[in-house]
Image (cartoon, rainbow, N blue to C red; front, top):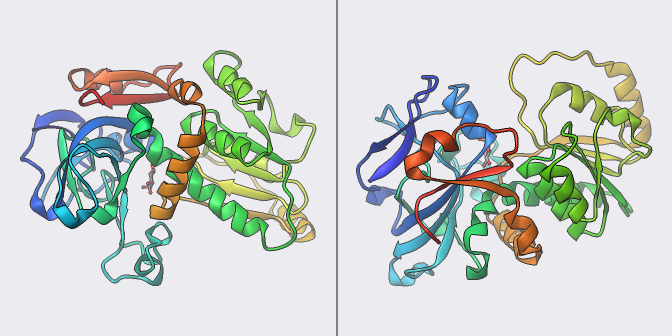
Length: 349
Ligand code: BGC
């Protein structure tokens, strides 16, 4: 079968090649791939910033934003041929740590977790893949091709879950959320803020086009320009750019009892000067929380599904700005200025 692969550690080694059928050890459920979302992590893997092949192999099948249909499943697995499914990315560490033992592998304590398409496990970017039932999520069939947004949505479902848990340390009635970055992660963060009844603000450097339109159509306010010029201090900020200068501005612009969730991974080599004394003083006097959030566990995938099912399908479908067939995988891996989410299409849904 055909698969999109990289050689971890070797920059720009992405290629589509023939690989063996998925091994039985990957799981009892065989899935036929429909679509694969491409994200920033994939570009970092392709440029060899990180990435680890499975033991004994020199290549890694790329892809962690999956959508597929079950082809074969054991009777007692809870899955049947034709089910629309998404694969869970992270698998618990083998020890396991307390978090992984409780199914909260997104909070792995010892870093020995593995991730499909990223760390020591082949990804979902192949015509067929296998998974254990406990690492597959069945989707509402009505979501159809939009199901490819499940994995990125799970990342935001987790971020919002943790924001809520932190907020509830005391009496909490948030009113405003600021999202920095209007890429897929930022727009899904905004969607979930809107679904929580908050006043949503999104800040991005792009001045016109689809991103401001999507924000406006959500009933949210779009901002461009310096963050410190915003006329309000948000109760919640979700930082989705990973850009160091934006992070500094976000830290310096939190509201009282504010929560800043860092959801974007920064590239190396961005230096910014921070006045830690002032930041500490403000954080102590205002009960601020700044925290990082990565990955998602099964509960978050379920939360993400509910959120996508509630959302306007027309709005969601506009997040997918390009679909490229496998034969045009090179185009799929080219970043274009108007891209939001690009999907590599394996088969029709
Ligand atoms: C994925 C996460 C993963 C993280 C770090 C992200 O792009 O969505 O599932 O944990 O990369 O590897």
